[in-house]
Length: 441
Image 1: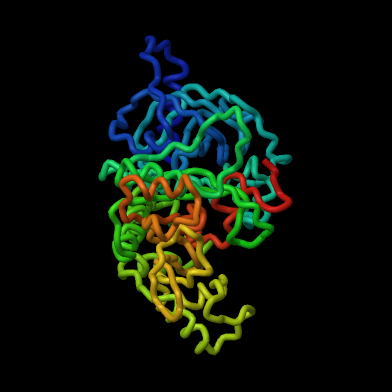
Image 2: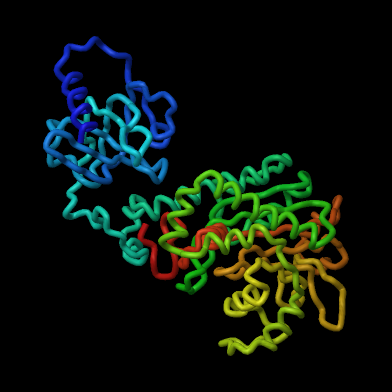
C-alpha cells in the first residue's frame, strides 16, 4: 500500500507540473519492455490489448499484452484515467515511464502518462471472459478470435519459433529453398507435395528444401488430418543409404525442438501444464535417446504377437494404420522409431528398389513418434534409368543427364507441433483449420 501511495504522488506530480517537452517516446513491444535493462524512467510507448483491469480508489492497474510473449506488462495509472472503455479486450496505446516495479511479481512496470483507447471491446459480448479457461473445442468455434487467448497465443508463438528453427537447421549448409509460388496463364492445381520439384533442383544443388502449404482431399475428420497443412520437404543428393537420410531427419527433429524449448520456454510450459501434463518428461525422453530402427517386416511380427486387439488386423503387405503406429512406439519404450524397407507394392514408383527377395521391398522410411504416429516419411529415390524406363519421360530425363543417388523426406509441420506440445487435435495447432466440410476462414 505504501508503494502505491508513493507511486500515486509521483503520477499526480507529473500530471500537474508544467514539465518541459520530452523527446518522443520509444515504441516497444511488451516483450522488449519486460526485458528492458534501463528502468530509470525512460519514456516509452506500448500498444496492445487489455487482459485485465483492476481499479482501486486512487490507482488504476492494467495488464496489457501485444502477443509478443505470454507475460503481460503491468500499467499503473492515476485513477482519473479510469473509464468504461478500459475493458477486457479493448486495444490501447499507453505512453509513460518504464520503471522498476516494487512488486515481486514483475521486474518492471509502465507508469502511464497517457492512455488512448484505440478500439473498444464490449466485454459482455466478447466470447472469451477474463480468467475463464475454455476448452479447445469451444475456442475452435471462433477461429477469428481464438488467437487472442493465452493457449492459442502460446501455440502460435511456438509455431513461429519452430518455423525459424527449421529454416535455421537447413541454412548453415548453404541449402537452397525451392520456390513454389508461381502465377500461370494455364490451368494449375493445388500441390500435394513439392518433392518432384525438389528432385529437379537437387540436380543442380546438392541439398534443397521447401516449407509451405500442402493440400490433400482426404475425407477425414480425424485428429491427425487437415485438407490444408504445412509440409517441410527436403531432397539431398549423393545419399546412398537410409541411415544417412535418417540422420538428417533425427537431426532436424532434435535441433528444431531444442531451439523452440530454448527460445519460448514459457509458451511450451503453458501447453505442457494445461493441455498435456507429463509431456515435458516425455519430450525430454525423446530428445535424450537415439531414435530406434526396425524393419517393416519386424514391425509386422511385433504387431502379430501383440496381446492388443486391433481394428485392422496386421498382415504383411498391408499399410500401417494409426493404431499400429502408436502401438509400435509404445512397444519401443515411447522413443521415436524409424520403420524401414516397406513392400514395393505399397509405395510410389520413385522409391528405390531394394532388389531383395522373396519379399520385395523398397528403401522407404517412416518416423513414428509418441502420441501422433507417422511424422516423417521418406525414401531413397530410384536413380537408375533402366529401372524407370517405363515411367515418365520428364522424370527419366533427370536420370539420363548426370543422375546421382539421392533421397528425401517430408515432415508434417502440424503433426510435429502436436508431438512436442502434446496437443491432441491437429486443428488446434494451425491458425485457420480447414478440413472436410469445414472452411470457416
